[in-house]
Length: 322
Image 1 (spheres, rainbow, N blue to C red):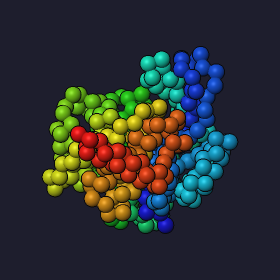
Image 2 (tube, rainbow, N blue to C red):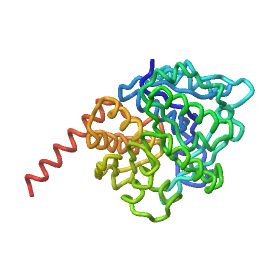
Image 3 (cartoon, helix red, strand yellow):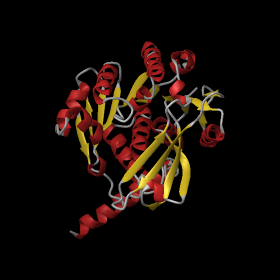
């Protein structure tokens, strides 16, 4: 059985290979995306035992996900194929200033038709960690109900609940999303959020105050992803750890936050100290941002460890010179 089970919305990705508006781009790189699917693949590449729960369309894109997960060692035995629905798609346009613009085609997708009856309680109860996200909750009322059911099962069987806020006001009004987040925080154990998520909820509240807000309803851990500034890890026991990012030349940050979540959870499952889990997660996020697309750049453990050793060695040499 899988140690880490994720539930959510997989989407096929078309990333522009040239800069410009979507209407002006002629060529795209086809890949895979969806925050929780990215996490599942990233965790599997880092050596974890991973399972995934979702609905796919009975189309070629759905079949491509089944092939991907099989190749990556992600257990898709609880993935349902819905012949009456389609697999969601998104396009990434790259602006002249390097920023990204996302266009989604997901309304009515197979994943949005997830429902509580799709949750195999026995399968989920055997896991050590269950992970989902605010995006999954926002795709539809039935998907939100499926998340609620999965969390209920996980909590009843002592499975750690991991939750990335991933607030997307394009999917639902912000006030509505905020209420869903607040309700989920009371039932989650490990919380991940980005600076963008924090800004949606709390404006310009300082990072330290944000994690205090996250911990107040009862989670054991809150991890605030700070982008180029690294991350801030906070525990209910009063531990506060701020870690710098590993400097790299970013190409595309799509999926880097999902990869960070995966890496942190994998190291947490291995019993690593919080500081080591955070450093490793920062490295995985940095390496993912060096490539194009969400899944293609996701690193394997050997690559991450070699990167960290090389950077530490370079830093040590630089210190001696000074």
